Image 1: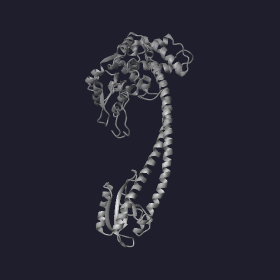
Image 2 (image 1 turned 180 degrees about the vertical axis):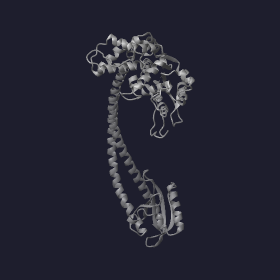
Image 3 (image 1 turned 135 degrees about the horizontal axis):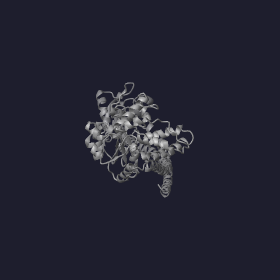
Image 4 (image 1 turned 120 degrees about the vertical axis):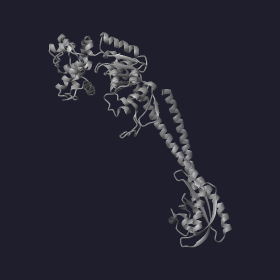
Length: 539
């Protein structure tokens, strides 16, 4: 909202406030006249020659005048909430009277009847009754105005008088009720307008503040995302990484589904963010889902959302990750870990862009670009019956293979330089020298944990190094003859040996500061998956 609109709105509010004040003055004048009229009518009501009763819908006496109390032979205070039926002498009259009230409440005009009544001391008299429905506020319901004439001595005279009085009193009571209701409504409207004016002024101020804040946050967020996930953090100048960068530039502007393949720790998440930041969806969110980190019984509700009460413990409605990513990108990391029963639902989202929340029959449509990643050989998983072939072909539209670190060892000096600078700043050190021998050792190592393992090694070395020279205390196995033997092994054998070695070293502890996952530089869930793959079990 710009300044001109805000000023115009404030001007309109000021004009409206003046109008409300004028209306309020008129209302006060009307209220004074109403009070004078009400006093006159109250005296007329009390001392009228007719008995007047105000009944509720069930025939209970809510109010009466002095004449009415005298006709029933009791004090007015004793009649409150008393059913009028108790003063009807005969059973036929007591049966008829509720029907009489019902016809009155149905708005059929003034109803008349004659009944034999009795006073509290048992004295009988013949009464003529007339009734009409009096509309009041919704909180009080439809009330009944009942007039009573003692027609025992002069039925004709009293009937004529009663008819004229009924019309008069009905008019008075109706008008009184209408004016009272109008008065209350006007007061309520004045309060609402005053409150609305105050809230509108406050809302305008909050909107301006929030607008400025959102602009600043958006600029900051875009800068942070650009700094964090640009190619600047995906370090490499090897031929293998140059090919990856080229593929990212080719596919990023498109909406094609991308499948990132590579070992754990090779930077699949960074590549996914680089694709998103170079796409037309970069202003919308990128939502990351680690399929290996989510329990199997929760992954469906996390992906597709749930309705309140969809299962035990689902106390509130939850929006799923696909809805959050609408208009943007969803990154499904470790897609090979997704349970087989959910792969059908994922296939439908990729094909048709629609799904149902847990516990909801309503179909939700989304426009989401899918980037998936896996460290498994999905074709092997298909052969083993753990992954759907049709889902694989839907994901494999544009595959990008990210090479492991040992296949691009000439990138290691660049990575070391980058990580040294990063953790110098983070930890507050000033390491400025990495010896050639240290680089040779790092380049000779196989790095089963890939870039993530290298980063962990450099971070530990920054912490423990004294002076300005990087000193790496980690021991990279092994004697020359073992390295020669390992050089002839397949990649899977090398990984198996390294994981087994670290597990033995940590006494088969997986998680924690002294666990094998931390030393390998991988997630505990990924380590467990590798152990299942190689059949490694604690003795």
